[in-house]
Image 1: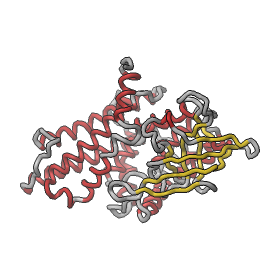
Image 2: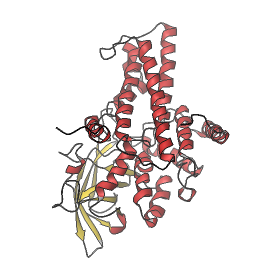
Image 3: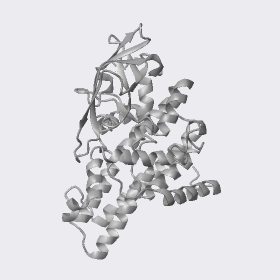
Image 4: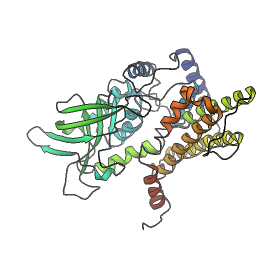
Length: 388
């Protein structure tokens, strides 16, 4: 693994940093998971698209720059270094898009990807259901064949749908063969949320933002052209999406490198002012050591990602190792924010960005498949340990 950047990659970094410095919106932006903030973020991401920065590693035909994965990582580093927020289009461009590239027909790619990149269509993920939790194979929402219409009628309920309150489209799994075994008989559908029979009900998050939604489907018609992959083989397609969610795309190292830089700056400010907070019970080492540990964790995550990109560039595909990634970044995120709150002490409740970041980090071990499930995957599929 070569950790040096080529002159071309360094020139790319300089171009990204220069454009972002000249064009980024006023910060902080309003939260993207609110009715007021979502259109503000969407307008910013449209600006990224029009300048060719929305999806740099995609082919130019779909709105990208044909950039390498290394250049995408560079873009992410500069994006977060500039203090910019997570993308409200991320479930589309980081989760669904890689799956469309792998399983989509030429017609689906031409129809879906440019509108996704240009934030004309905004996608949410329809995985979770009531009484199912992390057991994706246990979903009960169903699809019934509509021969006369040339498609399917979908019914059921999806819950904890991130940004479902604001998105225009949903991708998710539905059971199309109720007699099949648990991981079979599932089909991956693309659903227009403006279709008759769809009801979207916002659900407030812990931090007060209405970023979640419940989505109810009552005989919603979806044409055959909106089946991604093969009928009754949706599990294979969904595993490609979860691999992206847990692995490379959703949480790039740039996000955590920027957070840890802010953490180091906060530590220096507090030390200089003689205002170091009390250490909470969950942090047993001195705060200087905690800050150093956080910095090393972020660097380790970057190196692990570099190793993954090296493998992908040589033609390998993501495997169950993505579960290692997910456990690491989700627990690192909590550690970063716990350390910041410890530095702030009694002032933590008054410090909006760090407290809001901490509240969000607590969801990390839950979404994208709980860390308990990820540890089972690591034990069985990475380490080869037997089931009980």
